[in-house]
Length: 205
Image (cartoon, rainbow, N blue to C red; front, side, top):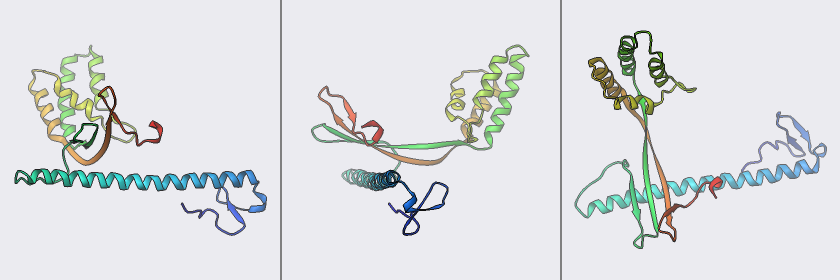
Protein backbone atom coordinates (compact mmCIF):
# COMPACT_ATOMS: atom_id res chain seq x y z
CA UNK A 1 0.00 0.00 0.00
CA UNK A 2 1.36 3.40 -0.99
CA UNK A 3 2.41 5.83 1.70
CA UNK A 4 1.69 8.80 -0.61
CA UNK A 5 0.15 10.96 2.17
CA UNK A 6 3.70 11.36 3.54
CA UNK A 7 4.24 13.79 0.67
CA UNK A 8 7.71 15.14 1.40
CA UNK A 9 10.76 13.94 3.21
CA UNK A 10 10.66 15.14 6.81
CA UNK A 11 6.89 15.80 6.82
CA UNK A 12 3.69 13.88 7.60
CA UNK A 13 0.26 14.78 6.25
CA UNK A 14 -2.46 15.05 8.89
CA UNK A 15 -6.19 14.32 8.53
CA UNK A 16 -6.83 17.88 7.29
CA UNK A 17 -4.24 17.54 4.53
CA UNK A 18 -1.68 19.76 6.24
CA UNK A 19 2.03 18.92 6.09
CA UNK A 20 3.41 18.66 9.63
CA UNK A 21 7.19 18.59 10.21
CA UNK A 22 8.19 15.10 11.32
CA UNK A 23 9.97 16.48 14.41
CA UNK A 24 6.62 17.90 15.60
CA UNK A 25 4.85 14.53 15.38
CA UNK A 26 5.04 12.51 18.59
CA UNK A 27 6.88 9.16 18.32
CA UNK A 28 3.75 7.27 19.43
CA UNK A 29 1.77 8.93 16.62
CA UNK A 30 4.46 7.98 14.12
CA UNK A 31 4.46 4.39 15.39
CA UNK A 32 0.66 4.22 15.18
CA UNK A 33 0.75 5.57 11.62
CA UNK A 34 3.28 2.96 10.58
CA UNK A 35 1.34 0.11 12.19
CA UNK A 36 -1.97 1.14 10.59
CA UNK A 37 -0.33 1.46 7.16
CA UNK A 38 1.24 -1.99 7.47
CA UNK A 39 -2.07 -3.57 8.46
CA UNK A 40 -3.97 -1.72 5.72
CA UNK A 41 -1.39 -2.81 3.16
CA UNK A 42 -1.83 -6.45 4.16
CA UNK A 43 -5.62 -6.06 4.03
CA UNK A 44 -5.49 -4.63 0.50
CA UNK A 45 -3.22 -7.48 -0.63
CA UNK A 46 -5.54 -10.03 0.96
CA UNK A 47 -8.57 -8.45 -0.72
CA UNK A 48 -6.89 -8.69 -4.11
CA UNK A 49 -5.93 -12.32 -3.42
CA UNK A 50 -9.53 -13.14 -2.49
CA UNK A 51 -10.78 -11.47 -5.67
CA UNK A 52 -8.35 -13.57 -7.65
CA UNK A 53 -9.51 -16.70 -5.80
CA UNK A 54 -13.17 -15.91 -6.54
CA UNK A 55 -12.50 -15.29 -10.22
CA UNK A 56 -10.42 -18.48 -10.50
CA UNK A 57 -13.13 -20.56 -8.82
CA UNK A 58 -15.90 -19.15 -11.02
CA UNK A 59 -13.81 -19.84 -14.12
CA UNK A 60 -12.96 -23.38 -12.99
CA UNK A 61 -16.59 -24.20 -12.16
CA UNK A 62 -17.80 -22.86 -15.51
CA UNK A 63 -15.15 -24.89 -17.32
CA UNK A 64 -16.11 -28.05 -15.42
CA UNK A 65 -19.80 -27.56 -16.23
CA UNK A 66 -18.88 -27.32 -19.90
CA UNK A 67 -16.69 -30.42 -19.60
CA UNK A 68 -19.52 -32.35 -17.94
CA UNK A 69 -22.00 -31.26 -20.60
CA UNK A 70 -19.67 -32.43 -23.36
CA UNK A 71 -19.98 -35.97 -22.02
CA UNK A 72 -23.51 -35.87 -23.43
CA UNK A 73 -22.66 -33.89 -26.58
CA UNK A 74 -24.45 -30.91 -25.07
CA UNK A 75 -23.37 -27.29 -25.07
CA UNK A 76 -24.16 -24.85 -22.31
CA UNK A 77 -23.87 -21.11 -22.58
CA UNK A 78 -23.51 -18.29 -20.09
CA UNK A 79 -22.92 -18.44 -16.35
CA UNK A 80 -26.50 -18.43 -15.11
CA UNK A 81 -27.76 -21.06 -12.72
CA UNK A 82 -26.83 -22.35 -9.30
CA UNK A 83 -24.67 -25.45 -9.12
CA UNK A 84 -23.12 -27.56 -6.36
CA UNK A 85 -19.99 -29.67 -6.87
CA UNK A 86 -19.10 -32.27 -4.23
CA UNK A 87 -15.85 -34.12 -3.66
CA UNK A 88 -15.93 -37.88 -4.22
CA UNK A 89 -15.82 -38.61 -0.49
CA UNK A 90 -18.42 -35.96 0.28
CA UNK A 91 -16.13 -34.06 2.66
CA UNK A 92 -16.19 -30.84 0.66
CA UNK A 93 -18.55 -29.07 -1.65
CA UNK A 94 -18.41 -25.91 -3.70
CA UNK A 95 -21.50 -23.91 -4.52
CA UNK A 96 -21.89 -21.31 -7.24
CA UNK A 97 -24.94 -19.13 -6.68
CA UNK A 98 -26.08 -16.56 -9.21
CA UNK A 99 -28.33 -13.82 -7.82
CA UNK A 100 -30.34 -11.51 -10.04
CA UNK A 101 -31.04 -7.87 -9.25
CA UNK A 102 -34.70 -7.13 -9.99
CA UNK A 103 -36.16 -3.72 -10.73
CA UNK A 104 -39.54 -2.44 -11.94
CA UNK A 105 -40.05 -0.28 -15.01
CA UNK A 106 -42.72 2.41 -15.62
CA UNK A 107 -45.52 -0.18 -15.84
CA UNK A 108 -45.46 -0.46 -12.07
CA UNK A 109 -47.17 2.95 -11.97
CA UNK A 110 -50.06 1.51 -13.97
CA UNK A 111 -50.33 -1.32 -11.44
CA UNK A 112 -50.34 1.17 -8.56
CA UNK A 113 -53.10 3.19 -10.27
CA UNK A 114 -55.31 0.12 -10.69
CA UNK A 115 -54.67 -0.95 -7.09
CA UNK A 116 -55.58 2.56 -5.89
CA UNK A 117 -58.89 2.25 -7.73
CA UNK A 118 -59.58 -1.01 -5.93
CA UNK A 119 -58.60 0.45 -2.59
CA UNK A 120 -60.84 3.51 -3.04
CA UNK A 121 -63.83 1.29 -3.72
CA UNK A 122 -63.15 -1.43 -1.18
CA UNK A 123 -62.20 0.74 1.78
CA UNK A 124 -65.20 3.08 1.44
CA UNK A 125 -63.44 5.52 3.75
CA UNK A 126 -63.47 3.18 6.73
CA UNK A 127 -60.68 0.60 6.33
CA UNK A 128 -57.69 2.90 6.25
CA UNK A 129 -55.39 0.13 7.50
CA UNK A 130 -55.62 -1.75 4.21
CA UNK A 131 -54.84 1.37 2.20
CA UNK A 132 -51.89 2.17 4.47
CA UNK A 133 -50.59 -1.37 3.93
CA UNK A 134 -50.71 -0.95 0.14
CA UNK A 135 -49.04 2.47 0.30
CA UNK A 136 -46.29 1.00 2.48
CA UNK A 137 -45.74 -1.74 -0.11
CA UNK A 138 -44.99 0.86 -2.78
CA UNK A 139 -42.88 3.10 -0.53
CA UNK A 140 -39.35 3.78 -1.76
CA UNK A 141 -36.30 3.49 0.47
CA UNK A 142 -33.51 5.99 1.00
CA UNK A 143 -31.97 5.05 -2.37
CA UNK A 144 -35.24 5.54 -4.24
CA UNK A 145 -35.78 1.80 -4.71
CA UNK A 146 -38.97 -0.16 -4.11
CA UNK A 147 -38.84 -3.36 -2.09
CA UNK A 148 -39.42 -5.98 -4.78
CA UNK A 149 -40.31 -8.67 -2.25
CA UNK A 150 -43.21 -6.67 -0.82
CA UNK A 151 -44.60 -5.80 -4.24
CA UNK A 152 -44.29 -9.34 -5.59
CA UNK A 153 -45.98 -10.59 -2.42
CA UNK A 154 -49.19 -8.92 -3.59
CA UNK A 155 -49.45 -11.51 -6.34
CA UNK A 156 -50.11 -14.20 -3.73
CA UNK A 157 -53.39 -12.55 -2.78
CA UNK A 158 -56.29 -14.35 -4.47
CA UNK A 159 -58.58 -11.37 -5.13
CA UNK A 160 -61.40 -11.87 -7.63
CA UNK A 161 -61.46 -8.49 -9.29
CA UNK A 162 -60.59 -7.74 -12.91
CA UNK A 163 -58.73 -4.55 -12.01
CA UNK A 164 -56.66 -6.41 -9.42
CA UNK A 165 -55.79 -9.13 -11.95
CA UNK A 166 -54.74 -6.50 -14.47
CA UNK A 167 -52.69 -4.77 -11.79
CA UNK A 168 -50.90 -8.02 -10.93
CA UNK A 169 -50.22 -8.61 -14.63
CA UNK A 170 -48.74 -5.12 -14.86
CA UNK A 171 -46.55 -5.92 -11.83
CA UNK A 172 -45.29 -9.09 -13.54
CA UNK A 173 -44.70 -7.34 -16.87
CA UNK A 174 -42.83 -4.46 -15.23
CA UNK A 175 -40.30 -6.73 -13.54
CA UNK A 176 -36.89 -6.53 -15.20
CA UNK A 177 -33.50 -8.09 -14.47
CA UNK A 178 -30.98 -5.25 -14.17
CA UNK A 179 -27.96 -7.39 -13.44
CA UNK A 180 -26.58 -10.62 -12.03
CA UNK A 181 -23.84 -11.41 -9.54
CA UNK A 182 -22.17 -14.73 -8.89
CA UNK A 183 -21.21 -15.91 -5.41
CA UNK A 184 -18.90 -18.73 -4.36
CA UNK A 185 -19.26 -20.69 -1.14
CA UNK A 186 -17.06 -23.57 -0.04
CA UNK A 187 -18.22 -26.05 2.60
CA UNK A 188 -16.57 -28.75 4.70
CA UNK A 189 -18.49 -31.61 6.29
CA UNK A 190 -18.39 -31.77 10.08
CA UNK A 191 -18.25 -34.95 12.13
CA UNK A 192 -22.03 -34.81 12.64
CA UNK A 193 -22.51 -34.93 8.87
CA UNK A 194 -23.64 -31.35 8.47
CA UNK A 195 -21.85 -28.96 6.15
CA UNK A 196 -20.27 -25.80 7.49
CA UNK A 197 -19.15 -22.91 5.32
CA UNK A 198 -15.41 -22.32 5.27
CA UNK A 199 -15.33 -18.74 6.54
CA UNK A 200 -13.69 -16.22 4.20
CA UNK A 201 -15.02 -13.24 6.15
CA UNK A 202 -12.73 -11.87 8.86
CA UNK A 203 -15.71 -11.17 11.11
CA UNK A 204 -16.78 -14.83 10.89
CA UNK A 205 -13.39 -16.33 11.82
